[in-house]
Length: 68
Image (cartoon, rainbow, N blue to C red; front, side, top):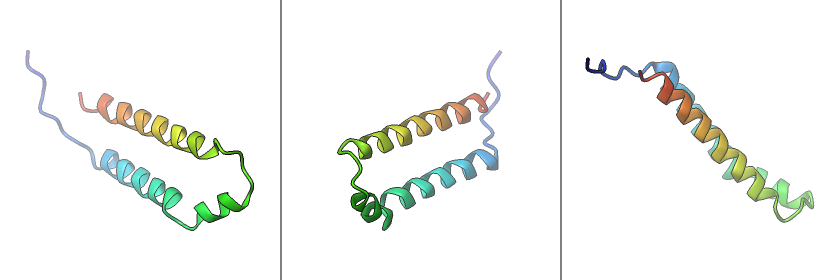
Protein backbone atom coordinates (compact mmCIF):
# COMPACT_ATOMS: atom_id res chain seq x y z
CA UNK A 1 0.00 0.00 0.00
CA UNK A 2 1.40 3.40 -0.90
CA UNK A 3 1.96 6.14 1.59
CA UNK A 4 -0.60 8.97 1.63
CA UNK A 5 0.60 12.29 0.22
CA UNK A 6 2.40 14.64 2.56
CA UNK A 7 0.10 17.13 4.26
CA UNK A 8 2.03 19.74 6.18
CA UNK A 9 0.21 21.33 9.05
CA UNK A 10 0.54 25.04 9.51
CA UNK A 11 1.75 24.60 13.08
CA UNK A 12 4.86 22.72 11.90
CA UNK A 13 5.80 25.42 9.43
CA UNK A 14 5.06 28.14 11.98
CA UNK A 15 7.29 26.35 14.49
CA UNK A 16 10.11 26.21 11.96
CA UNK A 17 9.79 29.90 11.12
CA UNK A 18 9.72 30.78 14.80
CA UNK A 19 12.90 28.77 15.42
CA UNK A 20 14.70 30.49 12.54
CA UNK A 21 13.66 33.94 13.75
CA UNK A 22 14.78 33.12 17.29
CA UNK A 23 18.18 31.91 16.06
CA UNK A 24 18.63 35.00 13.89
CA UNK A 25 17.74 37.21 16.83
CA UNK A 26 20.18 35.34 19.03
CA UNK A 27 23.13 35.40 16.63
CA UNK A 28 22.63 38.62 14.66
CA UNK A 29 21.55 41.04 17.33
CA UNK A 30 23.27 43.32 19.81
CA UNK A 31 23.21 40.37 22.21
CA UNK A 32 26.56 39.34 20.72
CA UNK A 33 28.14 42.52 22.14
CA UNK A 34 26.63 41.79 25.54
CA UNK A 35 28.04 38.24 25.47
CA UNK A 36 31.48 39.62 24.57
CA UNK A 37 31.38 42.01 27.54
CA UNK A 38 30.46 39.29 30.04
CA UNK A 39 33.92 37.73 29.97
CA UNK A 40 32.51 34.30 29.16
CA UNK A 41 34.94 31.49 28.31
CA UNK A 42 36.20 31.23 24.73
CA UNK A 43 34.13 28.12 24.04
CA UNK A 44 30.74 29.62 24.97
CA UNK A 45 29.80 30.50 21.33
CA UNK A 46 30.47 26.86 20.38
CA UNK A 47 28.16 25.64 23.13
CA UNK A 48 25.43 28.00 21.94
CA UNK A 49 25.88 26.82 18.33
CA UNK A 50 25.78 23.18 19.50
CA UNK A 51 22.50 23.85 21.31
CA UNK A 52 21.09 25.56 18.19
CA UNK A 53 22.10 22.61 16.00
CA UNK A 54 20.64 20.12 18.48
CA UNK A 55 17.34 22.00 18.67
CA UNK A 56 17.18 22.22 14.88
CA UNK A 57 17.74 18.47 14.65
CA UNK A 58 14.98 17.80 17.20
CA UNK A 59 12.62 20.14 15.35
CA UNK A 60 13.35 18.36 12.08
CA UNK A 61 12.66 14.97 13.68
CA UNK A 62 9.38 16.32 15.10
CA UNK A 63 8.28 17.60 11.69
CA UNK A 64 9.38 14.35 9.98
CA UNK A 65 7.41 12.22 12.44
CA UNK A 66 4.23 14.15 11.68
CA UNK A 67 4.62 13.73 7.92
CA UNK A 68 3.35 10.15 7.96
